[in-house]
Length: 324
Image (cartoon, rainbow, N blue to C red):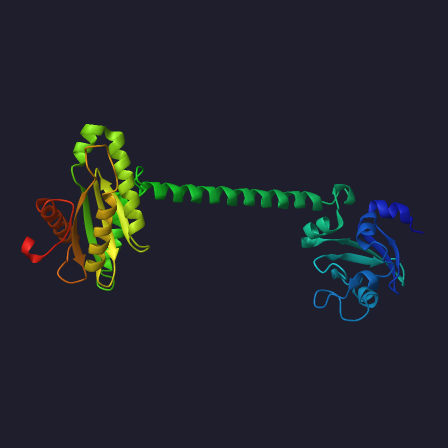
């Protein structure tokens, strides 16, 4: 005669069933899992294709015993949890099953609130679960570290192409966007605008570099608000700025933007008696014709800027063939 209380302690995942499907005994862990179910059909459904057929659970179960086949029992009310194991016949009508959760262990532990005491000391299920959870936690932390590293890399990349004083692109950043723009000049024409503040050295010499920096940041703010979303503005050093203006007719847009910048620059005050801030600008158009090398475009913009300076400063001049 089987001592059922001791069996429940020794084998917490056992089921003792008869051929009619009545559950005669269950391990202490399966008592948690099966709750008040008294028959196999109340707790399980046939697991087609993985051990049980489509008929009554108990009938299929007894046909598998003694043949070395594994038993699979799919829980009726918890589709993500299945039991697997093997069993023996104690008599013609009584079978003893020893079951486990297999790969569904994690789901079962969470669903039924199981812990280490619910498994026998010889069962390594919880150890594997702890390893699984530790591995999952490690992967999550690794993912967070990678995310932080990626964010730091992106921030470092942004800082490497950003002028720290004005927040505009620096020379390195400008070279990146200019190279891309020049390569696409045949289908996306643009204008290169070279801006230089007038008498900026006098501002630094008279009022100090702090005042000069304030002028630079205010001019940069004007540039940032006047250029469009697709345009680019950068500070290449000192009081020199470059802009890329993209448009179907870039010369007209660049001249219009340049004049608005000059008007707003005049409102940047320095001190009584000094006068308004002014700037000179040279514009060179790149539309896929006439310019085959990047340095040619810069030389054209520089020539137009020089002409603006010679013409009295505070103006925008577009490059033309007469400046050769």
